[in-house]
Image (cartoon, helix red, strand yellow):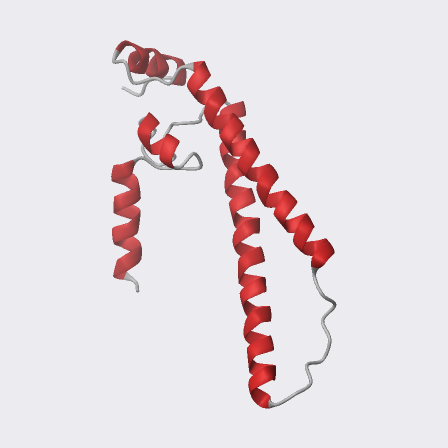
Length: 137
């Protein structure tokens, strides 16, 4: 028999596993602060970026310049993905599914969420996903 979200939350509450609204609010504020810091860092980099100019010099200078540009692109992509993860966590808070594993619907656990507030999966499901992903590497 599948429990409704309200029944599941009530069962979690009685087992002492549910998060208090103050804990969720604290995690929400951490997420918002992290998002703000990422956006501010992106804006700062945007305004302080040097205009890309053709590098003059020997081939080693050109290679070094290209490597720096590649690193900058990867860094910006990681920041963009992190903001998306944060937005996902904030959306789960808004729709009251925060802290619920997307795979098995079991609680993720407060300690895991405190360590990684953007977590979408409980430890067991995450380990299963990691094992499946490492098989294909």
